[in-house]
Amino acid sequence: MSEARSRLAAVPRAALVCGAIAVVNGVCWAAVTPIFWVPDEVSHVGYAQHIAETGRLPSDPGDGVAERPGPSEEQNFLKKGLPFSVEGRPSWSPAQDKQFKRALENGRLDRSRLGEGLAAGVHPPLYYLAEAVPYLLAQERTLLDRVMAMRLLSALLAGVTVFFTFLFLRELLPRSPWAWTVGGLVTAFQPMLGFLAGGVNNDNLSFAASAALFYGIARAFHRGLGFAEGAIIGVAVAAGMLTKASTIGLLPGVAFALAALLWRTPTAARRRALLAGGVAVVAAGLPWLAWVVYSRLTLGAGPAPVAGLASDSINGDLSALREQATYVWQAFLPRLPFMVDQFPYYPPWEIYFKGFIGRFGWFEYGFPDPWYRVAAVAFVPIVALAGLALALARRSLEGRWSEVLSYALMAGSLAISIEFVAYRYQEVVNRSAFFEQARYLFPLLPLYAALVALAVKGAGRRCGPAVGAFLVVLAMGHSLFSQLITISRFYA
Image (cartoon, rainbow, N blue to C red; front, side):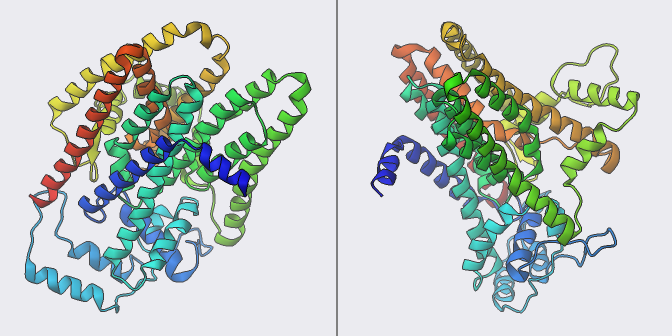
């Protein structure tokens, strides 16, 4: 008991404060964002509702076509009754509002049909099992109240994401405690993290698991690969894999990190490190293997679409592979003269940068275009200061290249895997739509926090605190104006 208390006492209070701020920010977003206006929220709510109401996971009846009974009567009624639309302003009617609420409160609307949840039913169930808890706690309330209870869990997960991001920075920059707080706070106020945390979406648990994974790897590089580090890495990978199959994209970097950690471990401690690595592999692999076997035998489910499309990506002929490689190249780098143009725009700018700064709702509204250019200009000194910090610390980096390469490989492999899947999605599923969204790279938020922390460190001891305070205030303003844009969009 005393050991547990001492470990809790060792947790920095600033980490808890940063996490709490992220939770409050997520709750604010949950309050201002209309229901079903977070991407795919209607599907994620349907999945969790189906689990809570029936006690069953979505299943395939055996003929290769998943059950499609349409949305639950309650969910369908709510979708049609809300006065929001993609185009134009909401139309409010007090009389219709009272009638609408009375129909929701009478409790006669069916809740059990899966319907829209089928779109999310391709994902592993961990997030939805967790969301079934607040749903059941508010079961006697209307669906509006139940969704708000579910949104509060997502806001809590944003706090977990920022908490582990703070701990990651503590391991990464052990001599710069003030930079940890700046990086944690800037991440806590990141508008798209808050927007997603204000809705029901399994990305929220994916972000939290990835932040814990980055922390576990950084801790292992700085303290040695022990049983605690192996357990953190393994459990984080398992949680991510049981939430969203895109976690597969991080695994090459994780494998490289474990191999590098074992290689650099002194011979005397090699046996302990090997056992810890085994703990990581077992903790990560067994839950995923159990889920795959269960879903195959009980649900009749095949691999998740992300994994399935990724496997399709390596089975084509040489010309198809060349096209895929061209697509991935153009997703991040300028098109070379001999390449066929794959995009009608420049994805790093239109998708990833603008999406990171803020594209809200169903990506239907955001900041005026000039403000994205202002944001790009603001990033220049941040990147420059971070580069200066790395240049000044180049001697200390000489012994940390394996750690740096691990993070780079995690980022690169995730980005490339997303683009390979995006290519297959466009070719196989929908030629008129692009798969990419900025949120798919948000498992890398700890690296964004590291960029900010390095920029503060690069400003020096004298100017660093002032620069850090400015960046935090800037992040607060960014979050506030993002929420004001949302309020203006739906309520003005």
